[in-house]
Amino acid sequence: MKFRPLHDRVLVERVAEETKSAGGILIPDNAREKPQQGLVEAVGSGATLDNGKVRELSVKKGDRILFGKYSGSEIKIDGKEYVIMREEDVMAVLK
Image (tube, rainbow, N blue to C red; front, side, top):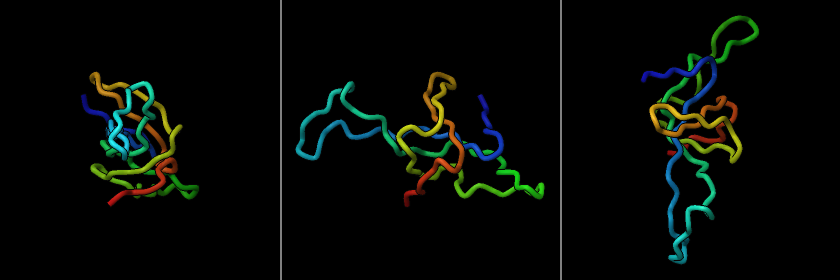
């Protein structure tokens, strides 16, 4: 399925976190928090400004980003889980 977010929205696939702590202890699934990092899978065309012009997004497909714990809405597309959020919910692009 092809998917294109509208306006200033971004489709993100969460990146799996480590299953071990720094000390080597295995963390069970129910104790792990959802990752706050992800890969951008698709971006919208941009935000419409007051003067009618469209401002392009700062993130692009393939960027690894950092976002807030409760940012966006979780959706499923073809059995895979994604998060769709506004660009303003993205806190940083990781390099």
